[in-house]
Length: 291
Length: 335
Image (cartoon, rainbow over all chains, first blue to last red; front, side):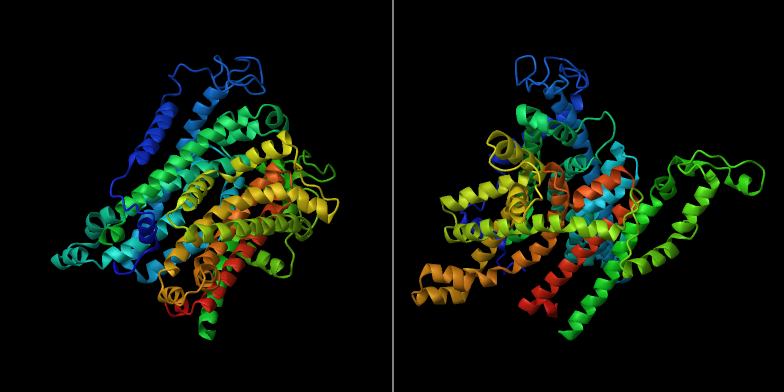
């Protein structure tokens, strides 16, 4: 297994950077994620303007001391709308990926451990889910339901089930053959115990990286749904909905800041999540250590 | 090979059945299709009493000449709503096999006509995006692999990483602002007057979609080329004194294209999703815009028909890519 040279290993060798520390950039990325999450959590108590209040300043003006990110067409404060938007965007991203990891992970581990018929059925299910373009599947689900925060998060979670489940299944297949699993089976451990005590901790490591990447994907997917008019309904503010608001022709032409600030917030967050996920994947990649 | 193809065709059939069933049942089971057909009138609950002659039928529906319960009964019969979902699905599948995707609730046009009319624009957009992606990604991938670890490699790596973190709608909004509004270089919306205006007005949206895909392709090609460059036949060619250009383009490029081909299939899904959103941003009247409008109006035969056409197309593309891949690389067939 470790004799084969993986592309990733070559990547790093060529780049001359077989790092075994996470690196400063990783901690910068984590710091950004923590800051934006805290801002989102504390939005109601932070000393910022009411995101729904209109005419907090003159409408459609650029950044100023009064309105850090300027105001939109109704004179609402773009800064506080960006902070409040983080609440829904991050909540949807987090809830969605949480559901994907729990359901997909459980199905994947069970399929990979028991193999046979169960595996065939579950794998076929994953394959079917992946046979839809992701956004089309999301559209299919949200189109017929009410669009509460929970529905949207659940939809994004369903998108995550198949890719996460496949990874969990693949890692389980590998670990199930390892000596420590066979040893515990020989001692007489029951299936449930082997899955939870032996397999789960090992499978969770590669899934950790995927969770961060998946959170980024969910946040972007919420934005895509917003453009299709299928994000969280009503007054709720999300980054996706703010970007859609700011992209109406007149605003985008004269006051691009209304769309650009939420875009920038989303971009930084997604990039931080991608970067942190990539670093964790490289850091925990066992094959690479062997190399 | 024949046996391999037969197995794949069987699998294809199963997946097509599963995909169409999932699409059909999710639209039928979530929400009340009857409400979508005849409006809120469908929610009255005294039709059993009317049938038993216990009370008068009401007349609040769109069609004044008929009673509400009559309307409900007609709609149920027309759309076979009294049948169990599985039976409805089978009947619907029979219709589809004959090219009948049903009719729009909104304007009674056949869904197949709507799809036929809107699809070419979306396809043109996606093909242009793929071409742009390949034209950008292949040279950049080769260049980065050739100068691996040098400045150009670092720069393209960072650029790819950045591009992969920009959602395509965000890129769309930014490019629209800069190129269409501020600099007024390219049109902001679709212009259907001639072939030239069509291509011209699709340039910006296709670029939006293309650069994101280009980043994926570039990274992949670079990694695969680096693996190929470690092979013995490359060392051999080098030892013979062959020029670098020849080694890169003639010897290494082709065996490094396998992942690119696989990802082409998977990426089509992202491309389709991306074009749904991009069509909204650049007001392109393609299939994506049609679906979104239909969703808003609860015009569910159109949603179902369009979604099924897209999903089946996606499955078929991946099927072809799969066969192509195993034909190019015999090792796949064995495993």
